[in-house]
Length: 161
Image 1 (cartoon, rainbow, N blue to C red):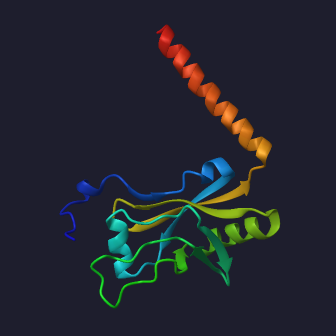
Image 2 (image 1 turned 30 degrees about the horizontal axis):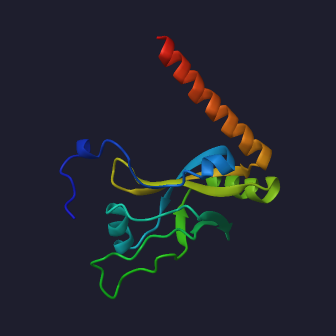
């Protein structure tokens, strides 16, 4: 794959995979941007827009953060050096961020949920990771009511004006 000549072509972040269900199932407390350690064929698969993080989560083990159960399918033109699709992948954060995540998970019973995987303006693969609390069923119903009310309100304002 040919890399763009200038950084102007990469001015936006290119979202590869998004966990849309996470914002509905979890109350997002804090969001972190983490690098992700990938093999060559994994990067190529992501650049082709393949990969899902719908069932994935992150965990802190031994002072490192790992992305578990993220599916990046094998590269179609990869040879015997192709990667394993659901292998654990190391997330790259500094130690202060890792300590915050560990404290949130250990003490407050929170969960580390990946929100999206994207390429930043420099062409590096990044994961948007959220420290979140699971919502109860009544909280989810409240979110649905609020979303429906906003939609109805927009319709009413559109019809008036």
